[in-house]
Amino acid sequence: MEFFDKKEEVLEIKLTPFGRYKLSKGQFKPTHYAFFDEGILYNTEYATSTGYTENQNVADERIRNQTPTLKTLNVYEGIQTTQVAYATAIRKSFKDNPSLPEDPLFMKPRDVYNRAELQKAPSKIDFLAKPLGTSRQNSDKYPAWAVGMLQGQISASATTYSSSVGIEAIPQLDITVKYNTYAAEIPGYAEVVAELGGVLDGVDPLEYLPGVNIKGDFNEILTEIFPDGTYLGVKKNDLVIEIGEDHSAYEKRNLDIEVFLSSSDLPSGMQQLYFNDNPTQQTEDDVGYYLVLHADGDIDTELIKRYSIRDINALGSATVANSVSTREYFVKDIYESEEDICD
Image (cartoon, rainbow, N blue to C red):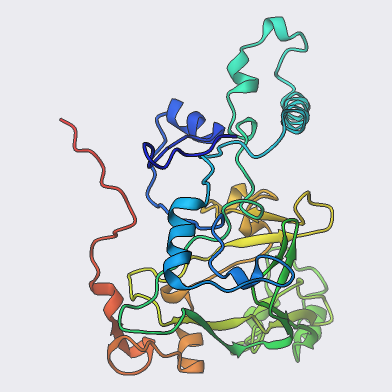
C-alpha cells in the first residue's frame, strides 16, 4: 500500500491479474473507463458522530492538497484466499476433464493453468461499485430513475441494499411473477382416437379436426396431447418494465443491463451472471440458464402494441411500433474501439 506524492505524481495505471491474462492472449481491448471518488469526504458534517462545518475554500484545500490518495490497487484478496481458490479450480479441472493425465509430469501445463478462471478478478459487488455519474448540462438535478410496470406488479420496495461492504444506496423492487397453468381439452379428439383404434403411429388426430387451435391463449404447451384430448398449457405473465433515466446526458446507450444471482451461500451474497449468445452452451454462470431478457427492439411487436409502449425520442407516431427512434441515427458506437485495418 502506497500513497501518491501529489507534487510529482498524477496518474498510475496497473493491470489486474485478469487484465495481464487478457493481454497475454492478445484480447485486452478496453472500451470503457470510469472515475471514482470513494476516498474523498465532501461533507464534514459526517466526519464524526458530531461533525463540523467548513467553508468552500477550506474544503477545496483539504480535498485537493491535504487528503492523502492511495495508489492504484489491482489485487483485492489475500494470498491465502487466492491460493485456496486456485487449488479448488485446478482440482475441478481434473475432475471435469478425464483426458488429463493423473501425473502432472505428463501433462501440458497450459491445459490446466492457462484458463480465465485462474486469473483472479475483483468482485464488482465489493470493489469499484460506485463510479461517478454525469448529469445533463442544462439540468440542476441529480440523475434519477423512472421505473414503471407495464405487466407485473411491485409487491415491496426498499431504498437501500445490504452487501458485504455495508449498506448501499441502491433501490430494491420486489416483483411478483405469476405463471398460470391450465388443463385444456380438445372437443372430438377422443372420438377420433377411438375411430382410429387407438393406433396413432404416423397419424395426427388433429388432421381430422380442421380449425382447432390448441395454443389458443396459451403462451406455451407443456405436454403432449393425451388420448382423451387433454393437455396442459401455460399463460405467462412475463414482466414488462419501462425504465428511463432522467436528468442525464442523452446517448446512444443510456442504460446497461446487468444480472446478479443472489444467495446467502455466495461469498459476497451475490454473483454476476453473463450474457451468452449461444443457447446450447448455457452454464450456471450465464443469464440464459435462469431467464430470458429482451430489451428495446428485441421486444415482441405484439407486446409493444398491446401496451402502447412509447419512445419519447421517436420521430413520427408516439408508439415504437409505428415510429423510428432518434437513437437509430447514432450510426457510430462510441463505446466500441475501432479495429485496426491490416493489409
